[in-house]
Image (cartoon, rainbow, N blue to C red; front, top):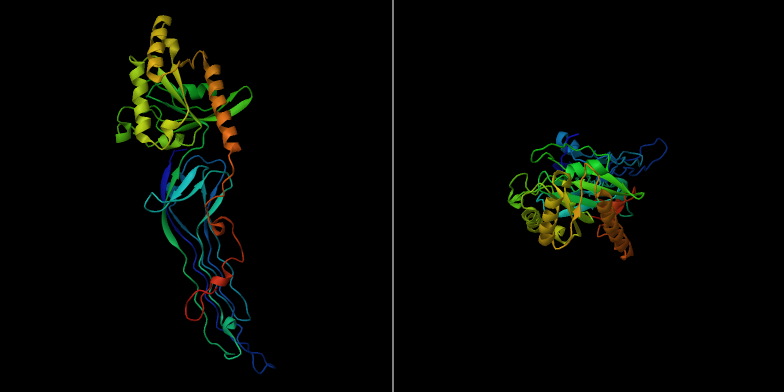
Length: 368
């Protein structure tokens, strides 16, 4: 399946049905009176996070989503049926933005979470609604309210516990393949990884999700190479695993290059806990390994892990370090008081009776 993490869509909710103008005509009833029913509400447009998706590729082939209109009211006080809703199925971690690409509408972070993007128009009142003691035979009804139409941006930020960062050919994909069942492309040339990959690692019976993103090079924040467009996929992680290849001539410079690109990107990524590891140590001798370890320690300010995904050396230790940071971060998050979501209740929970008091009155204004 091809990876796509950004898509532009057009949505339109359904128009409300018109109210009916009708009068009772029965053989033995002299003054039948009005019996026009109300129009039905138009269909809503919803977004929902579903399991089994990790890309927005479906929205490359369908960009327009339109809910159906509400049915018109009919005689004998028959109200029109509500229009059918339409739901956009997206992966967990999808953000919805307005057309400007900057105004966030909602952030879908849990499976099954739903959000109403555009409510359907309310149906109009039939003439039976306007009957009163001073007007017992009204001969008018309301049209339904129009639905809403919008152009939206969908952006996917994968949900992972730990993120792998480093220069191209730092061994990130090899590491992911060694600790999980993921099978990313691995080859001895730069930018083998062209899109993020996810894998589930297990250590001491505990599981966590790893995200591998394409390598960063100097000037990535300015668009050099693949650029930093995939860094958004590690924004939600608890910890970063920064891999520096032992094959680099200057491992300290390699570390600082990636660190500079992370700082230039911002968005709280530079503030995340970081574990540094010297990878691919199986290709150098012990003397060279000690020299490069000291150089990398001076650059990052701590003693790096020494790992080899091929031989398995040091892999258990670095996985346990990642797990400990993730467990600590998750426990700290659980201790924080829950905050009420800043989302309108009407946009989160559908209601069959919603909007009954918002239909148009005789002069076109809202009721209620």
